[in-house]
Length: 159
Image 1: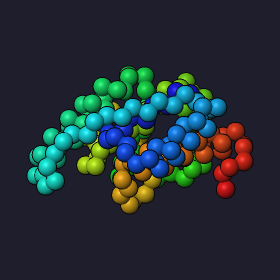
Image 2 (image 1 turned 135 degrees about the vertical axis):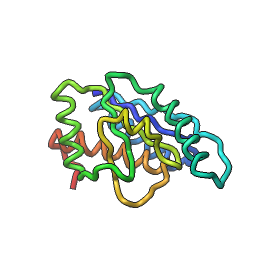
Image 3 (image 1 turned 90 degrees about the vertical axis):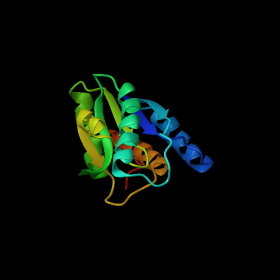
């Protein structure tokens, strides 16, 4: 399986880079992982609703440019479907079984995802009703993808 994580914003924190690096290394035994970092749109601290939409749309255009037509796209969004780790594992297993070997997970910037990105997505996924920093979400996502492969292989890790 080829998994691409398209994410807005540069990762600056060393501890997050190390954690993500560790899970990407572990995932190498199961899948090809590619993390695509896109620049976040520069914007003032206080934005009007229309300015927020403009920022999301510009980031959305950059995201969509990195997704191919044959990607199965899973957008991370607070309004998405909540799944257990086992459900995510089952979903990834079914995608692989039915020939959807190219999966793209999308993590938006601090304002979220544009409507166009949501429309292009095959599904939306929420990890919680809480809001997480998108940099931390990247670590949580790679850990859950790793956990999913371990679950699917019946290997020890998942508790």
